[in-house]
Image (cartoon, rainbow, N blue to C red; front, side):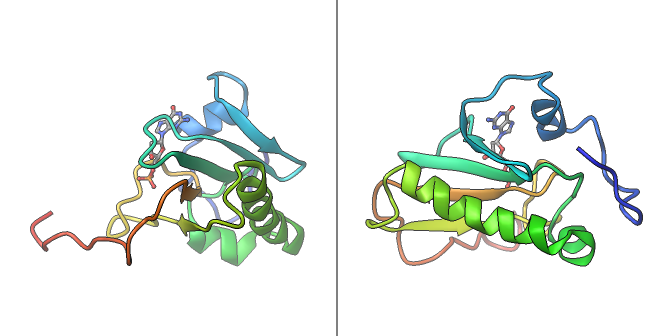
Length: 131
Ligand code: DGP
């Protein structure tokens, strides 16, 4: 895992950083030089995998601003690979990136949810403004 200039807000104690360092276990689905993918601990659907960059990125803002082309390509390639490995490439799946406060991001390390295994519905539910 590497730190990047301009990424001061990254918290290296977040749970996914600890998984990347091997301090906490995960059920690994896929790994390459730039990416780790593992089962979500609270699956919402039969297939629910998190795909994360190994670099220290909080979310889409710093990832899109400072990640290399190789890192960005690797994240997207890994999503496709995970879909194939989990058997949903043909049946279909949804990817979600919760980003920032309004995006309801809980873990401050960029992660792509890969969701499938049954029909997921028309679109993401938007909660009433009070939520
Ligand atoms: P988000 O709301 O987009 O930040 O989603 C965070 C997801 O991370 C949530 O679906 C549950 C998952 N999660 C939280 N802690 C752990 C953990 O320790 N291990 C794994 N595998 N998943 C976790």
